[in-house]
Length: 270
Image (cartoon, rainbow, N blue to C red; front, side):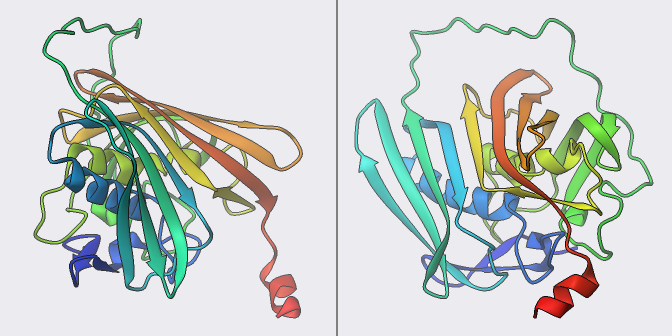
């Protein structure tokens, strides 16, 4: 298992490790690690004075597993509310961009409200089966994360609830933040709750939207995910997010859903 998802090779440049591998193509990156990388770099600019409450990470295409540069800029400065953006550029092309609203916390608004009607499920014991059956082996992203299914699984269609945690830092020798832990795994919600066989259909999320009133207080996060399909190749995944002490917010992904092209047909087009 890799010791981190990235190595910092300069003030703004990062080299991905095998832990960032996409299940569809091991020369590409899974969406979770670059999302966490971008959010972490924005957090560094906040200096702990406010908290990211809404993040939209847009994937501009396939993300190569090669060295990239992260650039952060403030779009709307403010003492209580601000908007920042971070871009990941590889080979001269912007491959991912995050836009984050952050808000200043207050000691005067001390009422906490939870709307979950039932207690959270316990974190199950480890299971010997792979978290994502049917994907190529070895695939290093699952080795860097711990997945404990509560209901459903990526091996069967339908909604799924899974406790998960990240076992390595995003950047080597740098502490992983609670938000980064969440971002690494949140992009997997569509794979966990797929409604069609993953070996027959492609699920392509074009973005990850996070709306959070709180960041995790634990290394464990519960993804309670479900996917809806329109019947004409478009879908959405919604996931309620929790840590062991309660609700965190939601994650949403727009999806392009298409039958996989057989290898023979793909080769005939190249």
